[in-house]
Image (cartoon, rainbow, N blue to C red; front, side):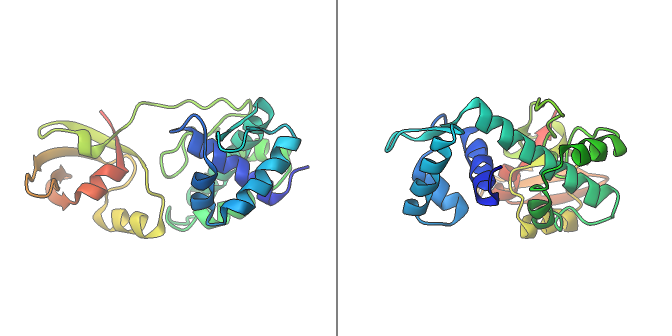
Length: 216
């Protein structure tokens, strides 16, 4: 049995490894908001359990056993987010912290029944893919809105920034999952964008465009 802290480390390593082959101690410290020395202590424990491969000053990556645990935690988190939004009518900016607590429930039977009850959803409310019961993650190609040129269309399918403030901003602008948009113009001065959506125009900053993921 792994502790809550150990599970959080495994999940964090998994997320960081999506963009970096070897995750550094400093990366983990920044993500988990803790000291590098505390990270080192935890990495030694996880290495002793053969959940990670760890060599000081050379980074860390998950073993097959560690990745299995991490993906299962992510599956539980995203299923709970889906349940809270779709079945209990919470807003998408309200559910992350609740799912953070619920992801550590150990019963896989409960999670499998939850998955079946909801019809085996493929994506959480933020557009992130939900791993299946075998740990398989089916991703689809998404690109940041900032890479779309004027005249092109797309559908909002995900977000990079999961912060409450950002999600509330998107909600206010109706820039939510499933909305179809067209890039009308990119402003040369600051690279902000003017979008056409549902018969109206919306201007967004470059930062917002970088954090909205689009399928074409």
